[in-house]
Length: 245
Image (cartoon, rainbow, N blue to C red; front, top):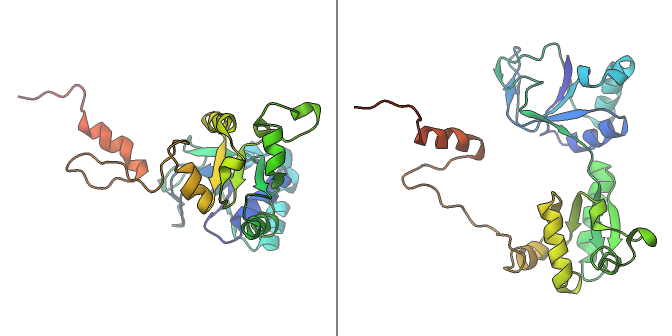
């Protein structure tokens, strides 16, 4: 019925990149589940449904064995989509995971050593493509509205994920107009990944509008509530149709 991968395995991210390269459609469990054999998979586990990969039926079993051995990752074959506990494999609580288009800004004012470490992580440990864009090139093209497709310059709109290594002064990259465009890109679904000083002195700055290390105020008298329990907790605070005397 499906193949399942525990995401907590060391090389699971590298396996996911290989699954995408082999044109497999992959899903990620938003909640944990337990098979009838008593094996529990945590939230984030990968699910490769046979029904969603009919174009790979003839080679699927051999591919999974090859990928498991090649990446030293355990891939379990599951005979049924029904689970003893938690979500079923094809439920709406597992979402498709598609390969994002990712980039990282490099050169001044970004830290060279940190940039190299991050690129090595993607290139060797994950084996997933990460475009490197010179900071000056992005500023002169995508963030100023000049160049773009006409000159083949990098455009922020072409990417789903942007990684910013530590930097001392990001105002040299994002001026007032560039900052506004970056915020609009995030609002439209772009994922901004910041490291070190880029997070502490830029994203958390009041001009960007993000918050860093700040806890949300919980309801008076309530215990700490994890995210997945919030909907249930709030629902219990209001009971429509209740009859009382």
